[in-house]
Image (cartoon, rainbow, N blue to C red; front, side, top):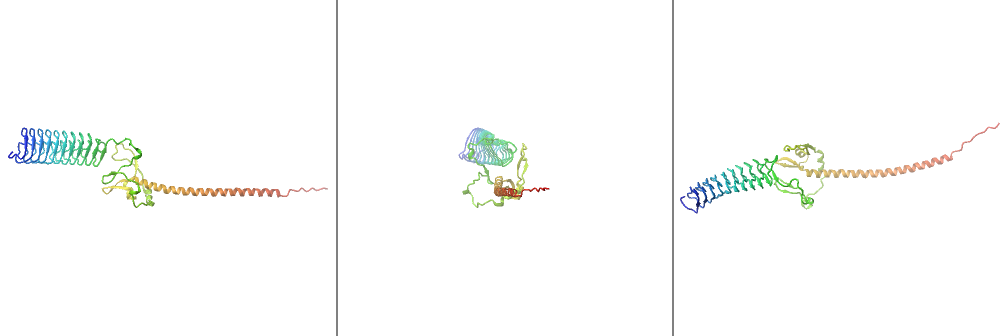
Length: 341
């Protein structure tokens, strides 16, 4: 060291190579041993920030924390061998072996022992909990909350897991969310349940039906006639390991009939808006129900007319029978002619 510049060193080879850098603290054998130009660094523990040379504003607390960091800055490692191999910058690791394998990855945050400990070049990942996302390697923008959360993901990105390891066919598929403790459990108030929807901005919510949330309100009219062109099919999802047969519609086919019945992703038909199909189905049902009611009214009218006609016919038949009887009485009695000799 050529000038003090508010540096503090305590331990074998601590700040050994220091020259003009300022405001560094190295406590422990080999702490900041090779630092030359890095400033505002703090290293507590044997081997903490040992290979740091020009990286600044780094904090390492724990044996061999940020051990191999060279020029990267703004890194925080608290725990044994936390961020041991990191050279990427702006990573935060709190816990033994947290972000242990990180190399050039940056912007990662790990809270918990072994959290994100397999991440190498992946960036902007968050792991909260012991061993959270500890199988993730090169993926980015993953969020894991809970013990062993998202451990089924290896290279996928933009995944979220809360309280569940994330297994199954979607485990290593990007843009997937896993939430534990919600499957197969009853709700606390069934009468208040609402369907949860998600829009293209990844906003969760529900679709209100109150008039105060709507405008341009008008009857469906003939739009519901599109239903007659739809072709229901049976199918099995490609990713379904159980190969369960399901029933539904093909989004591409529905789009040819009515584009408003389809949700798009990346400009391509993605899924059918079955809730809208149900509304059109209700519309057609009401139309048919009205026809049935009109037909039933006509039938009732015809029955009434027929009953009147039958009564008239019965009356006419009675009159005819009466007249016939009168005619029988009026017939001349037969006469016998006797010849006397």
